[in-house]
Every structure is written in C-alpha cells, then in structure tokens.
Length: 107
Length: 334
Length: 122
Image 1 (spheres, rainbow over the protein chains, first blue to last red):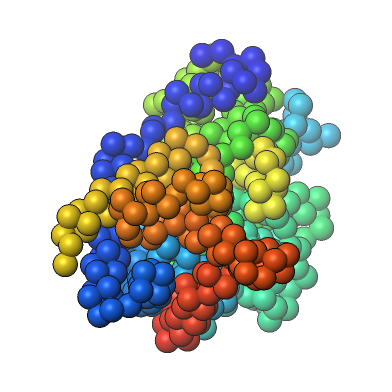
Image 2: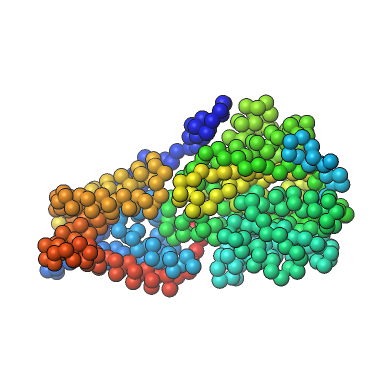
C-alpha cells in the first residue's frame, strides 16, 4: 500500500471505508416519506370534503404535520424514525419544525 | 540529555502511575469492559441539569477518586493537567474549580489524556513536582451538540462514524510509590493527511498515529513485539485497519498485539456504534480501568499507550478545512 | 376519499425522499445543505411554472416535501407581485408560508418546554 500523497491516501481511505447500505436506506426513505405524504393527502382530502379551498387545505396539512413532528420529537420517537428513514423524515416538511424544538431542548 | 532519537525522551527516573480512576456512562456500562470501570452510571445526566454540568461532575469525581486511591494527601499533589472536548475546556475547569491544585488546562482533542501524562512526567522527572494528577473526559451528548447536530434531529450516521464515549479517566503520577512506570515519552507532531470527512475521524488520525508509532520505534530501537500490547486511543475499526497497513508498509508488523480503545469499549454489533468509541474519555477510561488493572494482575509488563486526536472544530469543518491529527505515545512498564 | 390520489402522493413523495437519501449516502452534503437544495429547487421549479403540474398530479406527494415549500414561496411571491407590485417581492413568500412557519415556531417552542433532551436510543 503506497501512500505518496494526500490524494493517494484519500483514494486508499475511500477503498477502506465501508459504504452506507444505500439500497436499504433508499427503500426505507421511500417507505417513510411516502407514508408521511400519504397522511398529508388523507388530511387534505378530509379538508376538501369539509369544503375548505385548496390552498387552505394545504396549509392545514403542513400545520398538522408540523404539530405531529413536534409531538413525536418531544416523546423522543422522531429521532428513532430519523435513524431508520434518513431522507424519508428529512425531506418532508416535518423536519422544518425540528430546528425550533431542538433549539429549546439543546440548551 | 534525555532526548532519544528524533522526538522521544527517556526518563532518568521512571514515573510511577500510583493510582487511577474511571467513571463511565450507561452505554459504556453495557459494553464489554464494564466490569473494569470504577463506576458506571445509569443515566448521562447524573442528577445534573445539563450535559455539560454532568461532564464536569464526571471529571471531578474521577479526580477525587484517583487521589483518594493514591493515599497521597490532596495538599501534596502539586500540579493538575486536565482537558476535554468542550469549548474552552469548561468541563475540566468547572469540574475541578474546587480542587485547590495548580491547574493546567490542556487541549489535544482525544489525545489529551496521554498529553497530560507526558507533561506530568516531564514535570516530575524535571524535579518540578513530586505528585501530579492528570485527567480528561468526554460526554456523548455535549460533544454531539457542539460538533455535530443536536440529538433530536435524528440524523443518520454513516458506517465510518464513531460514538463519543461518555466517561472520564484520571491518573495520579508520582516520583515515589509503586505502580506501573512510565519510562519513555514520544510526543507527536501534527500530521494532516488531507481528510475532510468529520464522519471518518479514524482515517484522519491514522496518519499521525503511524508517524508517532514509527518514530517511537526508530528512536528507541524497539520492535512491536517488544511490547505485550500496543493501544491506540480512538482510531476505531477503520482507523485501526489503516494503521496496521501504514505500519506494515514501513516494515513494522503490529497486527498480533495491537488494539484500539475505541474498538474495545463498545460491542459493535449489539450497541450499533459503527466504527467504535471516540473522545478524550475513551482512552482515559479504558486505560484507567482496563489497562491499569491488567498491569495490577500482572497480565501486562510492557505496554505502548498512544492517544490519538483530531485537531478540528465545527467552524473548521464548515469552512471546508481538512482534519489534522496528532498522536502522543508513552511506554509503560511494570 | 380519493384513494388513487393518496397512492400517487405516496409514490411521488417517496421518490422525492429517495433523491434526498441518495444525496445523504453518496455526497458529503450535510442534512441542512440538502434541505436548502430541496427548497431552492422548489423555488426554481415553482417560479418557472413547472411544479404546479406535479402538484396537480400528486397533491401532498409534491406539497409536503420541502420542494413543495419552495414552490409555495415562489407562488406566494409571484401572486403578491401581481397584487402589490414591488413590495410583493418581500411580503409574498413568507405570507404564503405563514401557516407552516408559525406552526413550526409555536409547536417547536411548546415541545421544547414540555420535554427534556434525551440521548439517542440506539
């Protein structure tokens, strides 16, 4: 194993470092992200049935999902979902709320 | 002249490690070395209101315990070298504010514990002091908050990441008394291998570890097989492998008797700690608990203890800087 | 209840998350940077008038991921400009997203009051 330069060392380290299990991670992200969006859609349909117009319904969806994520964070459940789901919990708007709840907790 | 070779120092009067103490947190309590620690706690707050206060309590209690075990009066301990990972080393300074011993706060990242023992040995061998206490600590929660992300964010950790040990270790060194003796000091130079990935510290530090290790062998004329065991602080599984390769490429085979404290302190499969333990508290607690006891049980007669550190902070990472490493080594003999 | 719409939301939302997951695993981008990429993409696609087709097709599958939030900002800004002119550039985006933002701040604050930080259970 020859390490003559920093580039050589980086290439060597890349070979030595195990990769994340990307297929499993993508599947979990798809599942959890899909479920969160489906829950959102169900809430949306409910609002539409109640006669709310579209943009207000979308707002209700985001408010309720944000509430859910704050609630699950407070119960210490959300970080377990986060470890499992990766981007599945990061990308939906639920993650938006976490930056606020953790700032209080983080102190 | 005490200097030997390029950067090693031979102590004219070996310094005795008279006593040690180690206190760890709940995850370490569930690890393979749990029976070797003096105290292992059920929760990481230890009755305090914040993790930083808890970490201060860890180091305070560890130092008090080590001094009590040494049977040396606190007033006879002339110096204290301690440090940790938190900004401005507040864990040590706040934790030891009532210790009433002249205090040197030091920072070597995760190499702090051995850095402290080197400085303490120099103070004793240079006749500046007779008894010196060293300590260092780390806490998973306070470290994550400072270096990475708040815990509640629930981020995924890649396989190369390591788990900061919640724990503290302390050692009382003396000119007199009995105990395993520090004979040779090999302080390390900063070595930057250009690794930027803060989730792969082992790779970042392995270069420095190799540099210190190989320099130690060249300076002293010793071989890996001269030691019963060689320990690094927290290279983790990946860094350990890399160090073995780097040493082998220069003709030194350490595979048979080398291990890493970060690898030993956790069970990789059951505890999901990915590449292993890290943090100042890692080598501090593993040495003060496990390795010291192996000396007392006469299972080890000669050990090379090498702590490794990653000299970065959250700003340097965000600015796209690479992570320089450092490794300090001491030879300990029965 | 339009269950077909729920299914489309599931698939499209899941796929957008998969893109995020690939970014997490294959790049060194931090999670915060990935979120910024998503929001910005949403703003650009919304501003170009493309995102609304995805919204019509997948409903919450397009609005819940952060790209949807970016789209909301863009749409709000465009609507406000046509109503208020120049001032709309500043007021439009945040006004449109006000519900989600206020909820985030409010519920986040409440959550931090009632709970204690805990170590990751892993």
